[in-house]
Image (cartoon, rainbow, N blue to C red; front, top):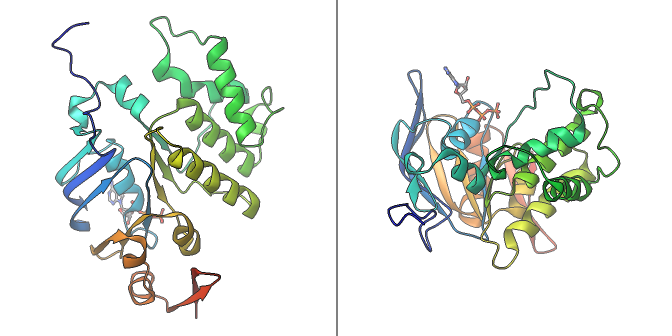
Length: 269
Ligand SMILES: Nc1ncnc2c1ncn2[C@@H]1O[C@H](COP(=O)(O)OP(=O)(O)OP(=O)(O)O)[C@@H](O)[C@H]1O
């Protein structure tokens, strides 16, 4: 092995760090300076009203756009230090939309997740197919392999997208509205699945989720970043940020907090 080759990631570094980050689109500041650090085993949820900047922030954390101010690091190093394929094995993004311009089978679509892992010639082997099949099974889509993705329902297509990300098998999951199109059962199943993966001992995984449901955020998040849509950011542990007054201000609608079975529930007035 070439001794000069950089070893990624840095030992014991947090999965994800943002230092003194601030984001601007056009003339508008989406968020003022804040910092975050996500360790293995943790889940961070991004909350805020429409247009507040959640997707822009997630894409910045994914390395798809430069921060206006500050720095993002994964595994202890800025994206510029990561070769693209190694970064794709470390972090994976579930995008908000899944465009399907061409006909393709569900299995072919899910196998796209293996690309960062393939050898020089880019052929998928039996092991890659087995990983893809296991991912489809874990989202309840065993038996859908040969279906054309263009014929799927919205919820089925979303679960194919989740299976594609599982097939990619990154350590850091970045999920933009992963519950889009999912019914209640599949919403909980998807969040439980990612929680299990993140909490698995020794796996070194973590997750960042954009959610619209405050109660699901209260149930699954360790940390919350709440964008108020006016450039304000509240970042911290779940119980520090999930306060009725802060949420009411950010969403522009009064909310009340109720304790039920040891769990905080937020109800709109
Ligand atoms: N290239 C751009 N030029 C101008 N404005 C932009 C650009 N990209 C994003 N925006 C604006 O930045 C704001 C934040 O967008 P973003 O998609 O990050 O919001 P969001 O919180 O994810 O919203 P939603 O909950 O509706 O999905 C929006 O008002 C959007 O119109």
